[in-house]
Image (cartoon, rainbow, N blue to C red; front, side):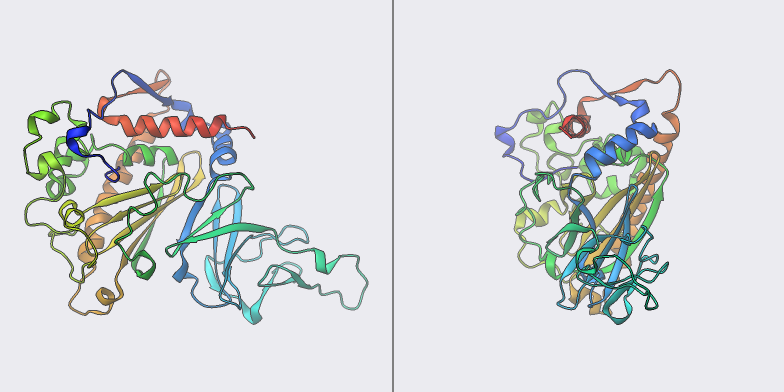
Length: 392
């Protein structure tokens, strides 16, 4: 879903597809060879979001991740610098850290297999030999480093040495959420889901709202334009007939009287003070960074969603709700009103995506076809094809 960086309605035309377009081949959603190709050409070449920096808050703290087949270790060193390495010992390739998170004893990374020890900088510090000789060049045998970038408290890594610049795959200018204090926000709740579907199915669902009236009754009530099965005013070919309308059903934004995405539509308080009147009117702002991350910013909180591929038909989805510190410290603020609402929306999306996956193995179904309103699904497919066609 995109609603940022849009031109003025009077200058824009109909957003929808103007001819029949077909979806990706059905086999691309479950074939292991296609999945392996997408790992190499997409997931191992782009900047992938992992976590908030404050979840690795203290020196010697760490978190582990897996992108496709690649084990990742992210830690904070003694100088308070975040570093990323492959979670692999240089000796014979054993995993170094097996827990999802923790603290490293003695400011060292010690392999649980043969006890090779590394400094937090990744340099090999010691090999236990019992006084026996060895031929390992300690000063030249560091952990395999991974490029890391922090953007407003969001930690990204890139497994390749490609020319992909940070920000290349954002769907909007990096200043789109300039009025939200992203760096200052703190996590209030986090939820991890294991989806039984290919990662592309999730992104397709995210990029259209034809499913909203049937799959998301609560969300469609809060965002009236979604009730029409569209995301933006110009998704309607007859938008000019409603250009003068001021109601959310035709111009987007929240229903009358609502201020945020919550169970009752009411603000949780402690709203972001720098937001414009238009940002408050709309009430939801999406920023997407393919293939792993999107944000939805509201007047009082921001929701961060991260995807990681687990297999041809499995995807990990982690959702984190971020709030101003004042909200988290205020006993009068019940953040569950925001978390419960969007958790319900995500659960509805998960069920729809998994149902979509189950139907794709039908023998005669070589591919699907797109409705005009699914123009962002088409753009997603074009992006993927370009990624796959890029030189190795």
